[in-house]
Amino acid sequence: MATQTKIGVIGGSGLYQMEGLTDVEEVRVATPFGDPSDAILLGRLGGVPVAFLARHGRHHTLLPSELPARANIYAMKSLGVEYLISASAVGSLQESAKPLDMVVPHQFIDRTRNRVSTFFGDGLVAHIAFGDPVCLGLADLLADAVESLQLPEVALHRGGTYVCMEGPAFSTKAESEEVYRRWGAAVIGMTNLPEAKLAREAEIAYATLALVTDYDCWHPDHDSVSVEMVVQNLQRNASNAQRVIRQAVQQIANNPPASLAHSALQYALLTPLDQVPPATLKKLELLLKKYL
Image (cartoon, one colour):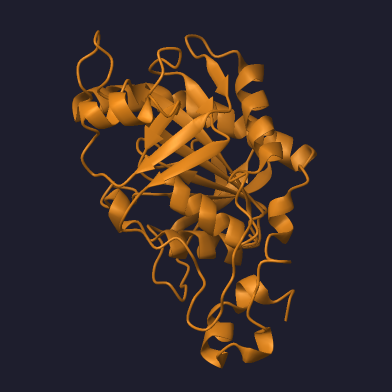
């Protein structure tokens, strides 16, 4: 099959494969930023070409801080991806978002410390606009997909803020209650903000399907988050997430939303390209070719 597809899916904890994917081809994509988390699965979902990547590897072997986010996003770009859905396990910071609910956040707060979140540098300066860190058209479409399925025991929460922490340890009670909840954030996770920044630099529309597994550690009526609790809810979330993604893929294929992300570099490049070192231009040619 052709290796160009406009729709990509990154599956987080608990979502290591894409059920219903047919005509599957496993591809290893070499990038200037190393190897992606795993081979990318190219196939068709309801007849629509899709590229799927297990964020932590198919056997969950990568810590959040170890994720090769640049390689993952670059690989998706090289396969022709223009719309990227991220499915991610999160803890809830609000009473209203209960375990097994789904949140489609519109904002992020960065609490990471050890992540490389840009393709640029080495003689090329770029500053992307990131006031709206997800593609709102894609986020609305993703939320519509959740709503249309009327999943039992699953409430949809449109919008809200995702706190991206470093991990791998979960939050302290002071962090959860006295910082993140006071900020008014909706959910907390460990992976999505670097992806969102890199997707914007790669001019890929990006949105998050956040799958609530727990109440972090702030809720007085629930035990502090544990791996056992998370795994149990991940398994229940995975089936629902697969259905939502299938529905969203069909909607994207039928009516792809316009996205400002697709021209994010138009006014972001500060260094004249004729002054950029040749090695940097070569490394980033995939991202820059329409501006060269």
